[in-house]
Image (cartoon, rainbow, N blue to C red; front, side, top):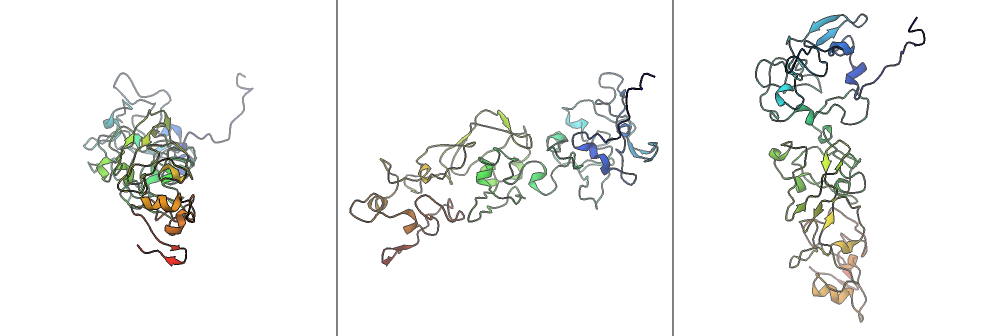
Length: 354
C-alpha cells in the first residue's frame, strides 16, 4: 500500500485571510470547498483563453455541505480573468458582467459588507473605474484570520489603511502618523476636522493630504501630500506600512502652518526641517528659541525676560499658562500649533494684559 505511511489530516488549513473559510456554510453563498471556485487543472486552454489562477470558468455559488455537489452556479458561463494587471478583468461597468469580481457578487441591501459597485447583474459605473480592485480591496491586508478577505472601504478609513495610532500607518507607533494622529479612535472621514485632545495631537488627514476626494485613491499606491503653508520633500520609497502602502523613509517637512517659530515676522523654525520617521521630541527648541541660543527669532521682550541677569528669569508658562506647563512641557495640545500666540497668566504681583 503506497499510502500506508500517511495519515488523514483533519485540521482545517487556513489560506491567507481564509477565503472566508468557515464563514461560508450551507446557508451562505459559495466557497465552502476549494473546487467551488478553483479547478486544480485549470480551465485555461491557451493564451488569453480561459481564466488564470486556476479559476473555474463557471464558479459555484452554492453547494451541498455534506457531499460537495454544486447546487447553483454563477450566471456567467465563462469568467474573464486573464491578466492581474488589467482593470477590466476585475470589474466591468458594462455587460457582459463576467469579470472575476462581478460574477459572484449579489447586491444585498441588508448586508453590512454589501457589494454595490460591481455585481453579477450590473455596475454603478463610477467607482474607481481606472483602479484595479485589489489595490484597495486587498486579499490579506493584515494577518488576522477573520474572514474579511477583500473587504475594502466600508465607512471607516481603516478598512483600507491605518487610521489611528495603532502602528498600521507610517512609521509605526513612535513617529510619523502616530505623532500627528495620536489617538486610538479611528479617523473616519477624509475631509474631517482636527480631533486634538489636551494630551494628544489628532490632525485631520486634509492638513497634509489635500482637501478633495479627487486626491484620494487616484493612482500609484502613493500618498498625495499638500501641506498648508509649507513643503514636503520626498525621499526614497524604501518601506511599507502595516497595510502595505509605500512611504518615504527620508521625507522631510520644512516650515509650515504647524512647524514655525511662533514669530510671524520671522516664522522659520529653529530647526529648518524635520524628518517624517524621526521620533517625537520634547525639545521645544526645535521650533522656538531657548535661553541658551546664540541668536533669536523671538521678540525683544522675550530676550529681556528669559535671558535677563538683573530680573527674575521667567519660564514660558508665566506668560503662556494655557499652553505651557514649564519651559519644556505642553499642558494643552489643543492650543499648541493652532496658529495663534496664546498669552495668559499672572506676572509677579500684577496681571498680564493682552
